[in-house]
Length: 185
Image (cartoon, rainbow, N blue to C red; front, side, top):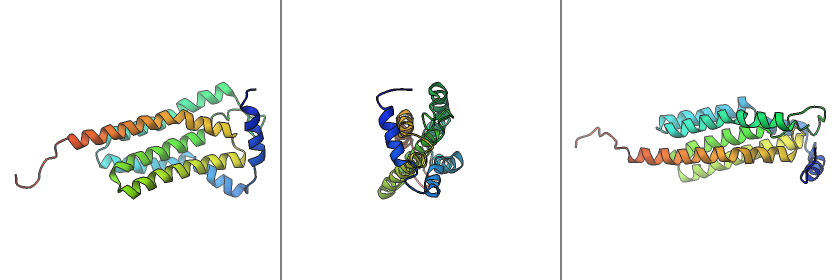
């Protein structure tokens, strides 16, 4: 493999890998595991569904389902070795980063319309911090090259933009829907 970005990618990785204890970086990397990230998204989906955001929930579920459909073919096509396992292949792009970005990002997008202003900001910040922590953990531990992580973020950004659009249109359409009155007219 060659290319203008690979040399800086490898040099940056060599400077960063194992610069933080493995116990810390493994915990950070684990934030991108399905058993960790998916329950967060499922809770947000349940909350949004209860509030009537069917379109947003469906978009978030679809985005999460598309993550492996996007990531796996690229891993097979590139067959890029890992920083600490040059004999293994399938490191580009990072599936853990993609999972974290989509799960936490969609969760934030789903709860934002129903939260107070400061909590909207907190939800967005939490999604960014959790995704960033996952990415940093993966690179520092040596599970992925920096470009693997960046590629996942770039690949999944359109998914989050589609979910954001669905959440906005869902919110607008529900605000136009007349509510039935329970009191006297």
